[in-house]
Length: 398
Image (cartoon, rainbow, N blue to C red; front, side):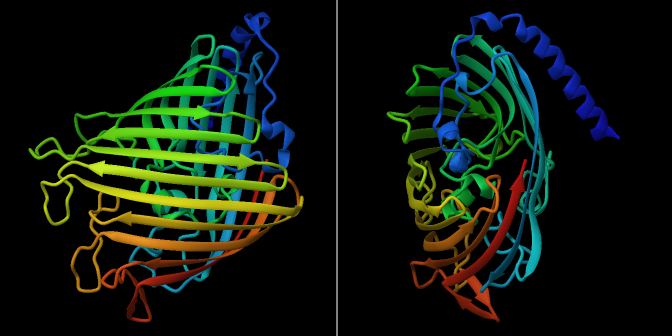
């Protein structure tokens, strides 16, 4: 009953704002034609972490839209499940040897010349295994106002804008998430100030409660900057940086962290390529010398080639080094000591698209830690430094 009331209120608010926005529609310019319109079959790939929509990407007269998405899977891992029933690094397809529901979500969106907003609820294994325990059913809920031409202020709960991959399989090349994606923030609460400098350049300043929670954990705020440069219809480059300190207020030694994320994208009708590098430093974060400043590094490369509109092959390589556990937190090795995580992985798969707004993917992934004492996987009561994953994922949206 409460959900029904919330939905009705949101619709009434959106409809009311729509009437107001139409009064200013005479100032509209012709919409910008994006590559998503020219290449509809791939318009969701790499779209999940865009910092903001361009001013010309939606109807300036105002429009309320509803959408839904369901993703199901079957997974097999050569690694024993934890006490919670999930695999290590659980997000997409976290349950072993069983059919599961990745996500079922419903969204309401409103876009106009002056106002925009989105509200998305989600259910399934992704929110259960990897989402915030507070507001667990809310994937995103935010509103935005146009302060000036091409200048927007948005506030509320957001999906992350950091990284190449998102939590929704339809927005990624692969089903599984790279290791670095697992440790990057999935969700953020705060405000974003976005300015579209030109058709090629967009910049953003943002402030959030913390690195990866909806609820504030201390008196500090996370501060960030983002920029997207699109030199042509096929290429784009995104840079994100976020500065945060999640140290509890009652602890004297602080652990300020700076995380930098850079990725480039190439998209065409047949070929999609994404490459990402990340570099982070943490104050007082040395694993041996706790007073030392530590660093981490990661990289990934993903590509997809479509032989025909309905059939594609894809692959991804990943490399992640966090010797001092800046992002990972404590990880126990084979000798029950804490070790920094050094891991590499390779993923191969095929995709069938029965209709444009669907996919059936079959993929295999091998993860392997790079140091002898990093035996973090367990299978049939034996420790191992590798894991093999076999995944089948089916998704449809409207």
